[in-house]
Image (cartoon, rainbow, N blue to C red; front, side):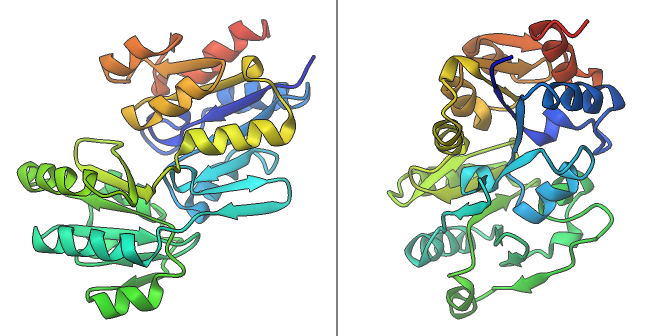
Length: 273
């Protein structure tokens, strides 16, 4: 079989609602890997947390982390950083609105206001291990502290569960920036990465590296921040638990993340049964 590339979002796509990868999904991935299919996780999580999901499958699964700002390219880890001007803008806007922002390196969380371990369980899964395996946190509650960490920071996320109006106002102001790419993986957050960077740019770079044509690339996602990635591949697949708008904009829809949607689609597409 000619080589294929398969890209999989994590939350709401690859894992179930208990942060697990099903036995059926793992078996399908491993069967296809043995036939030369290359699998990538493509997530907004930072690299160290994406690796926790990779370890649930095997080390041959590669990683796109931080919404495309970090990805494995051969033996090299490619990184894009937000940079000080963008960080200063984010800090000023969100701080003025009383919102908390978490910034990330590949293995460390920097928080401006609310400590990550005080967040809800589902939100906490995005920024730290459920088993608190990642405990490397640092407060950056002033511009001076943020500036000191700026060369390490790759991306960020602003989270607000109780005040959607403030979050909406922050999104409007941040969208005016020419330094940022803004997306959301839920109605309670704003994901922040460098301008002109996305999961899709990472997908294109990796496809070029492997010299695999777009018609032999597949991607799975469940939220609007996955849309650009799903359109960058030959076969874009939305999960059944995706918003209706996403399902209308892609090639295919499969079953939900809790019903082995990835495995169901790949078994049929590659005629594994």
